[in-house]
Image (spheres, one colour):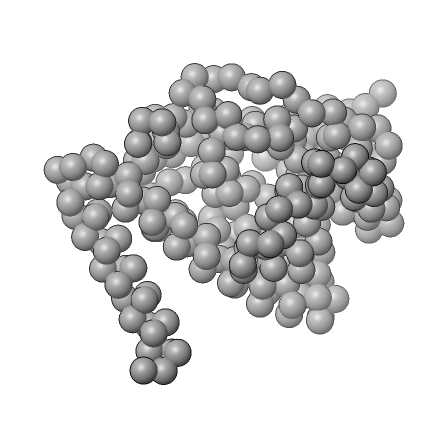
Length: 244
């Protein structure tokens, strides 16, 4: 059996399993949770592969700094149809065109990757923990698309990463998106974890405004603690904070 046959067989089995769980989910809610999780992770893998290809092509034609925006849009549209979840900007969409800026958002679950797909502006780079660099496909895409990797265990390396981001903002007007909580809250109630200071130091050092992007608590759509993952619409608002 050839490698191609193995791949196609694996994809077919994955699709059949996911669709079967969706069907079973009509009577067994936990099956629906498993089905949407599989659909979401399958979508992330598919979009990450696309992101690797898009990042290489866009770099070759001189538009490498829009790689994350281009890939984010694929997350938005693919996951809309595979999970039934949408993020809708109901206020402050005009602030998402601010450039350069530090965009900050509340971090709830893994579903925030779909939120980024819906709101991510052109000429922007996301920050991520350094360990994600080693994840196949996703890490490759993030590396090729100029993700700002933060080494939380090494302050000196983290500061070098921020210095590089400041230089990108000053020379190429490249914005940065940061989740200042540093980790997912998984909260079933509206709340924020304590903020790390990096986003605010970065804004001051680069002399750029901060644009908060606030997502409503969406535990009614996804709650890993309660094994809940439903289709639904989630509201997002943008704001603008200019440093004095």
